Amino acid sequence: MNWQLYLVLGTPLLGGILLALWGHKTWAAGLNIAMCIATFIASAALTAHIISEGPLVTADKQFSSTRSMCSWSRSPPSFP
Image (cartoon, rainbow, N blue to C red; front, side, top):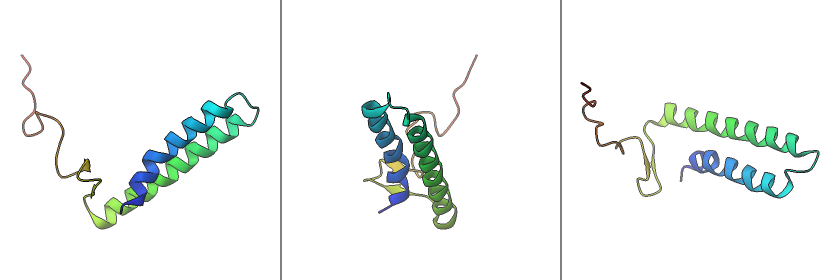
């Protein structure tokens, strides 16, 4: 299991939920900063994992760097 990817996706979600509940408090700015730093650290861990292990395939290939979701990924679109 690639915990780094789930952490990158889950940290901002958790931060949004927490800020929706307690965003009016005086310490909400500190919470926002903490969640941003946690997301940055998680993305750095994911980057290190990709660099050391190679392409990532997880969640039944929903997040795969080996296939593209774009219909024009094999050739760029032609513009007039």
